[in-house]
View 1 (cartoon, rainbow, N blue to C red):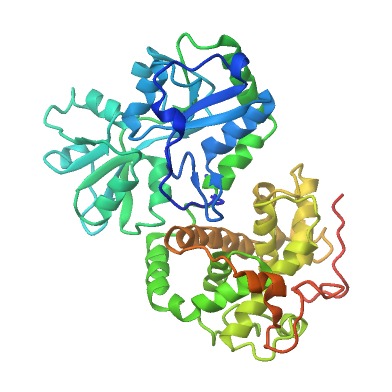
View 2 (cartoon, rainbow, N blue to C red):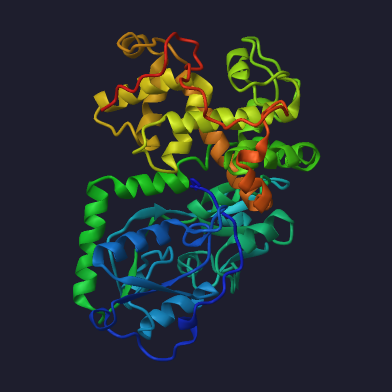
Amino acid sequence: MRSVYSIFVMLPLVCDPGVVAQHPVLPLDQTGELVVLTRNSPTTRYIDAQGRYAGLEYDLVEMFARELGVQVRYLDRQPFYQLLPALAEHRAHLAAAGVAITPARLNAFRFGPAYQLVQPMLAYNTDNPSPRDLRDVVGMRLEVVKGSGVAERLRQLKRRTPSLTWTEVAENDSEGLLSRLSDGKVDYVITDSTVLDVGRNFYPNLARAFPVGDQQPLAWAFPKDGDPVLYKRAQEFFMRISYDGTLKRLLERYYGHVNRLDRLDIANFLENRQTLLPHFRGMFKEAQDVTGIDWRLIAALGFQESHWDPLATSPTGVRGLMMLTSDTADRMQLTDRLDPRQSIVAGAMYLQELKESLPARIAEPDRTWLALAAYNIGLGHLEDARVLTQRRGGNPDLWLDVKKVLPLLSRYEFYSTLKRGFCRGGEALALTENIRNYFDILARFEEPHTPDLYTVLAGNGGASVDGSAPRRAGDPASLRPADNSSGPYVHVVK
């Protein structure tokens, strides 16, 4: 379901001025301003690794506002239990905050079309045995977010299990609860499956035990007696984005990669972040100075390639921390593939070239994800995958569609019809999705890097990979595919 998406950095948000408003919101047609109740969380609205607002709810609201031709004013209600009461008092036109539709809420609010299904899930610390059912939870320290749909579900379950007890915590979301669970300060947490899936990338000792109830739909909430025209427009909006695939692409951006790594992968990465990354952090930042690519993405790529081992060598002859072929090293003017600084800067420059070689119409973040796949299989095989995507009715410019066909490049009935033949496309899929996860983790724990003014004015760092005369990444007139097929890369997807 980052992108990152992708990808998130939880930063303290300054409350919007409207949070303290004591009067009902004015009709939209009088102000031209859509007032939206939301919350700061990785599944709704947050500040991403580039310092911009992001999140599934944020993207949806911004798209809806553009369709209406109005501006948006967000009211961050924290903690969560304050959000729906504010909507009932008409402090906003709608609430876009990951609100689950429950029987009790249906009596108090109107809901737009469901855009996502989540399931209440019991999370436990893997240092302890996994509970089998709610009877194992009785008498233990169980926490849920106050005012959440999960809390409402527990009150229903208590009728069948009277001895069940829990604590409702006045938090904005389950992030703080999952942190306490990871630290052993609480025994269990019940939260939405999507929240837990994102949280497990930062707390590898957490796992799912069992679902606590059926799936619940998430939807925007509106006051019962709110603007009927706005409500109808919201219904039409969600029908359209569901039909044209926009909603599916947004869910892929934020959640399409979060279950790729297991807890051992995550634990290993977090350990290496503490022990190995400090040796190379400055080099990754230098690579950002040269290319403009976020150093944390370059570091994530480097970890996927070699686990930050500057002496890594594969049976196929790729070498170094960024695992470059000899042809790529020569093109990037790299003199020693085993020198970590040279390898990191050259790898970043190669990734930049791959991005620049893709058709200009491909937008971010798809442009980056496709380039990462090409880093593994070459632009030629990526082009084959895009051709195959188009043949099968998909969009060759969207990672969501291309990643579905990448594994098919190793099957004869498909690769025999393509220009470059056999390819282990499944490896490129796994590499890209793993990097997305590693980047999410680094964006959470590592600070962004801002090049100094001198570096920016000097132009791409002012030095080549080997420290000799300056060169600009992307200068080569042609780019040979990494699969070593002959001839320049030719774009054939129209």
